Length: 215
Image (cartoon, rainbow, N blue to C red; front, side, top):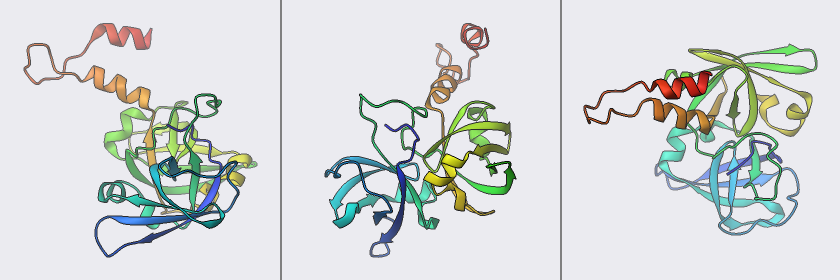
């Protein structure tokens, strides 16, 4: 579990024998607050990976499965955002991020808004109901607030601190990014789409749930 507050950026390198799976070596451009440990989880641009080998200068090696590579943009990224797993005593500065990527979007445009940078990101249609204006979304593992949400895109603003601390500032138009939607929205959607008690396999709207959510 993560908060979406990146601790810094790193340089990834994929290796392997040409199989769908791969090993990924990550070299951070900063010093960890304490040494990594074998088996701990690290968010690598929003993908939860397990530290399989510890290397000098804070670098580590992890295993990326075929599913991970197919559902994420890791293979195309020159820099990645890094965050160690949340401890129970930590502040939840962003929002609850699982490190399980829901889909991949692309940067449609970037525009300066004062000191901030606005990104317009394409949105897979199946994720559209889970991305709402003023809600939370993780973009390459970074917790952000959605400004505008449409069926096929959304926009976010990157403040100076985010631009300085993450790799998002270097995203050019066309760059692929990992998207993780808010886990709370996923559970709400699942409740709303559950099959009827009669087992007819049809979605059933639950008025009580709609009243609870909408007030």
